Amino acid sequence: MSSRKLRVRQAQTVVPFGVGAVFDVQGESFVAAGIADWPSPRNLEPIHAPRLERKLKVTGLWAPLQAPVADYDVPDASGPAFIRFPAWLFCGSCRRMTHWRIQDEKFGHPPYCAFCSPRHKLTPMRFVQICEAGHLGDVDWWYWAHSQLTPEERDRCPGSTALSFEAGENATGLEALTVRCRHEECAAAQRDLLDILGTQKMRCCGRNPWERFSERKDCGEQIQIVQRTAGNVYYPVVHSALDIPAPAAPVVADDEATRRIREHPYFGMLCQSPDAPGADGLIVLIAEVTEADPSLVKRLVEEETGRAASPEAAPTGEGPDLSRGEWAAFTATKPARSAHFVTREVNLGSSRELPWTELEARIARVVVAERIREVRALQGFSRVSPEGRMIPVDPSGRRRWLPAIEVFGEGIFLTLNEELLRQWEALPQVRTRTAGMQADLAKSFQRDRIEAFAGPRLLPRLPLLHTLGHLLVRQLSFESGYSAASLRERVYARSVEGDDHQYGLLVYTASGDAEGTLGGLARQGEPDLLPELLLRLLEQAAWCSADPLCSEHGGQGYGNLNRAACHACALIPETSCEVGNILLDRVMVVGGSGVPGFFEPVVQSAREEAAHRVGAW
Image (cartoon, rainbow, N blue to C red):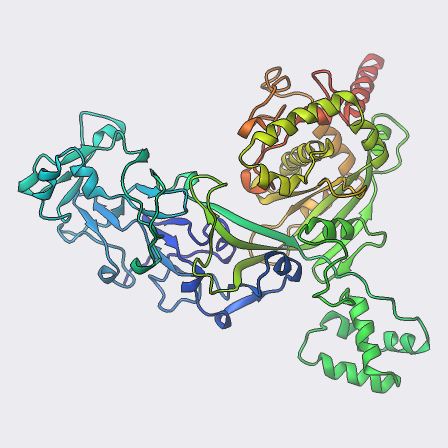
């Protein structure tokens, strides 16, 4: 019996191993199949996120009941389906290539070479083909081996069952690898892999590996051959939303009846478990003892647990932009407290000394999120480029639900002083620098995707807050105990109609598929730690090991959409950034190149205070 276990954690079923992604494990390679091959929703776990469901226009979000299994070790696994891909395998001993079929599978065992004794495990070919229409397929290795022969010579080959993948000893790199046909009729049929990568004239398969042959489509897109683990093989389209309390309903009048209900010994128990099987019985019991109407008891429980409004009611004016509701929840006058959203407002202290007074003047509000819940749903994916054609998770269109996961975490929410921010945004140097970024954005082929993040008009506050968020992630990774890859940002700086602009950011951790967090991130938001952390962040942002090249750069990064931002100072892991490490500018934060930074006075006062202390010493 094989001891292998081809496991995929539940949290990985959306990213990085969602539908359409190639999954390498223990020397084998698979691709995650579409949700049409998943178990029916009754065997899945429902994920409750009304705001996200409304935005994506789906009937529900579902996740596997348990950590899913590539269905090669556990029969009838309740998780997502996986298909072995690529189907072309080769033996590391005899170098024979085998086109593996489903009927060749032996449950619980990896593929073995049928020609070697003792048996050797087969290895998947390293290269696959993709196209901008979202298709993924095996390279036509028979055609590649015979591509330098004439059509008449190719016709003499009896078939594609005698290929071998050979490695030469007198060359290096791809030139040393050769695909050869072993049939005597075409002994000259061989070709090395020197020119394999890039655009080729071979035909697209017109489907993805999990789709039936009858589901293939005529595809006129040019194929590209890439390594199966290349970054452009899979670009997931993921949407996420925080679980915020529903808008509050009118407060129940505080009279004698409500006082008796709240003082009942079972009322607190009912509020702690409002969905428990015996909750309705407790409501009736409390109503009888207090001589109140059961509907009043229910309304008080809903008010106490933050469920006063109907979960289907959308926050006013939120629409498809989920950031509006989240912004309202974080900036609410009364801190929110619900089952999955617990916040409390703190301050930066009340120091009368520089540079703390300068820092406190620019940070308007600090909110520590002790508990937050985030839901992430996979809508589809694209290949070759992020702007390629999106393939939905169910290409047939029959499924009206999406795969999703829920993760729990903690965070720190900051807002800037709006008055000082508006004054800074009105400076000619700041507006000119932002206009240059807007011009580069207008020329970017990712314009539509980025405008969903930035809004119809790029405001200076967005690169300011976005860069500050990246700097905060980098600094918190040293202070909180979380790695930078486990921290995420949400920037609230989109331009909206009217004057209702946002001016804040959230840095939070929401990784893994278990409830609870370490508590280290929320601790960093306390008044005794956060001011020092922000000051160190700003002092380090004032220089970069790539300066002056970095700070004076006129356009770098993807599509020249960054200014003073590079891997040495401001970039973070792609999974931590909302928009892929673009629209960053360290100068907006700390100043430089003739542009005043929003926090430049803080850095200057810190330097002056340090110089004064050194002089006094």
